[in-house]
Length: 239
Image (tube, rainbow, N blue to C red; front, side, top):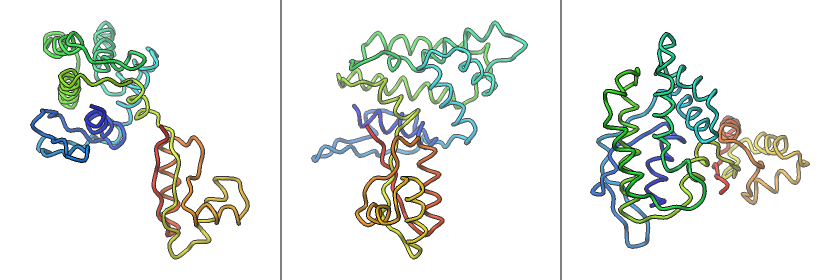
């Protein structure tokens, strides 16, 4: 269950990619416990700005920040500012898309959770009042499908914590290769860690994690700077 959630939901928020067909026939559990995904015929990459705003919307939904939710819904052009009464419909839709992930602690996905999400998805008359982009229909389909599979599996986990980890992950960076300009890479590590040059070199040589509590954007920026200096670094998400 966790592997499926990580693939379908994690890919959306971490890479702006979504696969909206989580049918049980599209993946296999391998003998060593890994999961193999087979069918990528219904995949799409979201535009960067749409993906960033969607992430902000879900982050605000988890935080119960109605003001930021409204701002994100306007930015996504889902609500016409000449029809403010539609905002409550849009807010309700956003909360329903998040669904069981808004609850705290480990949990099973119940049949009622899935039925409620499906009923919301099927209420097209209500949806038609909004200016929903096509991506929203596919994303809702994906989330309903994932929750239905988790229900059938009887999988238990803290789904809300997992989702919030994708929305605002804490990361570290591991320098895997200093490249042909190691001094520049070591200097970058020294700047990030505040250590002396010898300690920075030791971190690089021993492939130890650098950076404490980096956001994903900070980690990617540092990773890019190391790549520009000729090195190679890997982002590690802190659980």
